[in-house]
Length: 142
Image (cartoon, rainbow, N blue to C red; front, side):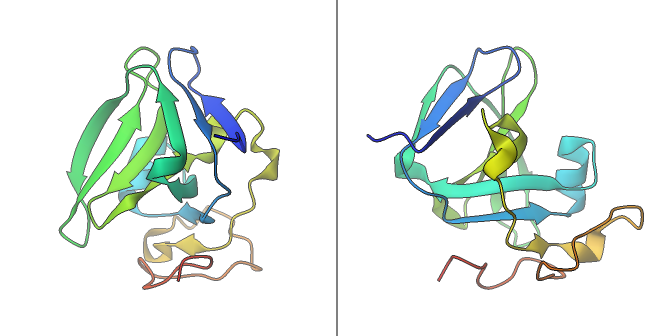
C-alpha cells in the first residue's frame, strides 16, 4: 500500500496510515459531533475503509444517527482522543478526524453539514456549501 497520509492519537498508542486520497472532507455541526469533540463541529476526512490500516486497539462508542442507523465513534482507549467515525449507512467509508492527522495543514473542507444545529458563535466560511442535515450527495461523493 502506498501511504498517502498518516496520523494517530495523542499518546501514540493508536496509529493509522491511509493508502488512498480522501473521498471528501467536511465539517459536521450536528449536536452529536459537538458533544464528541467538545467544540462547534467535527472536521473529518472521508476515506475508503479498505485503504485504512490501523495499528493499536480502538474503542468504539455507538449512537443512533438521525437516519436511524448506528454511528460508531472510535477513540484511543488510553488517551481518549477521538480518531474515527463509521456509519451503518455507509459501511465502505470511514471518517478520520482532521486533528488526528500528522499533518493537518492539507485538510480543506468541501462543505458544512448539519448546519441546522450549528452554534451561533461558530464562524463558518461563507465559501463552503451549507446543508441543514446530511445531503444526499456530498461534494466528491457521487
